[in-house]
Length: 376
Image (cartoon, rainbow, N blue to C red; front, top):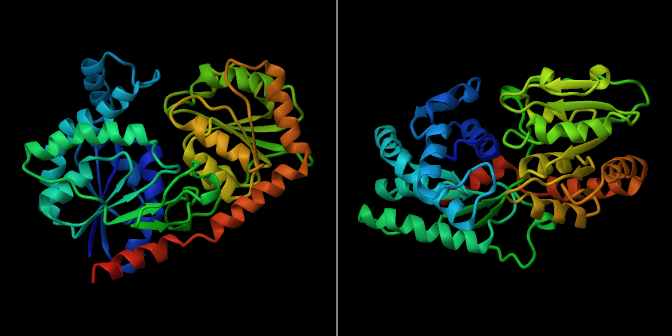
C-alpha cells in the first residue's frame, strides 16, 4: 500500500504524524510526505519518501497578510485563521501538491486536522483519506469557518466534500474539551513524544545531584528570547538546573541569563529533552503537553496563544499542572508555581495517572493495522 501524508508545514503539525507513518512503514507499506523544499531535511533519516510540494511558510504568511492585514504570529481573528488554513494555503499549495501526488499514485492520504490540501487531493484522485488530530478537538466555530472557506475550492474543481474515513485522535479523554462528541469514524491513538529515527538513544540532561531539573520550552513558534527571558530571569533565582530550548533562529547569546546553570538546546527530539526532567515549564503547546504527560512529568504552563489556553485549562483540571497567565500575574507567581510543582507529590501522582491513561490507548501500530484492514 502507498500512504501519503499531507500536513501544514510546521513542526507542531507534522511531528505528531510520525508515529503513525513509522507504523505503516514497519508494515512494509510505502510512505511519503508532501512538504515544501525547506522542510525536506527534517525528514532525513526517516524511511519516508519526500515529495517536494507546497508553499513555504514565508510565502504563505506574506499572502495571508496581503489578504487579511493580520499578523499570523500576532494573534489571528477567527476569519484570519480560516483564511490561512482553508483558503490561502490551499490556493498556494494545491496545484503543486496535486501534481506530485498524481504522479506518486497513493492508495491512501492521511492529513493533520488543519490541513485542507490533502483532503482535496484525495477527492481529486478518488482515494480515501483520514484525519490525524494534533491534540484537543478544533473548536466548533473555527471548524465551521474553515469549512465555509474550503467548500469554494471544492466547487471550483467540480468536487464534493467528503468526511474523513478515519478520525485518528491522539488526545486522551481526560484532556479533551468538555462536551466533545466522538465521531463515528474515531480511532484513538496513543500520542508519543517525538523520538529520533530508528530508536536513537536519548541523552540525559546534565545536572547537579539532588538539584531539580527543569525543561523550559515554548516550542518553535513562541520560543523567542522576548517571551523566554522574563521566565528564565525568575527561574534563575531558584536552586534548579535549567534545560532551555532555543527557537528556530535564537542563540544562547540572545538571552540575558547567567548561563552557569542553563543548558541551551537547539532542535532535538522531545523524548530526549524530557529524559531526567522533574518539571516542564511550557507554553502549553499540544505536542509538548501530551509528550510531558505521557512521560508522567508535571508541568507549569504559561499559555501564549492559539489553543494553548484551552490545553492549559484541561491539564490543570487533571491535577498534573499549574497555570500562570501571562501579563496578569506577578513574577513571584511563576516562582511559587514552580516551587509548588516540585515540592508537592500530588502533581507527579496526577501526571502518572494521565500517563497511565495515555499508555492504555491503542498504539500507532494497532491503528495502522486497523486502517489497512478496513481497506481490504
